[in-house]
Image (spheres, rainbow, N blue to C red):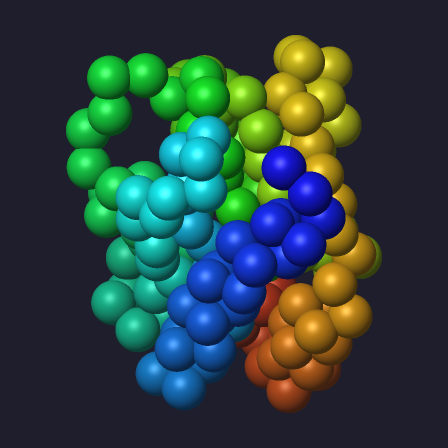
Length: 150
């Protein structure tokens, strides 16, 4: 796959992040694609909206993708580097590739996933970085209590 394919996949996750922001939540989105680029599921962080600490963007996309025979060739796309919880999901189910929109605002478990052989592609998206960075500036109390402590 090319960088333009990865960018197109990231756009799906960005659209989810925008939906979350419009709902009053933390703008983090995710999507899961098969190796041919077919979308299997997308989701967004709805921890604030639903009061559910487990409803991260990656877990929402994972649930929406439904049960798969194997996850090894699937691609997890997320607007922000996955936290330790979501990095554990990637490891537990054996995703082979994770595409990250940005890791400036939060690094999570990226280096751990790399050390386990997961292919990490950080697109360093200015849009992802500024969308979340602005949210953090406007909502430091939510960031610090919900995400920043991870």
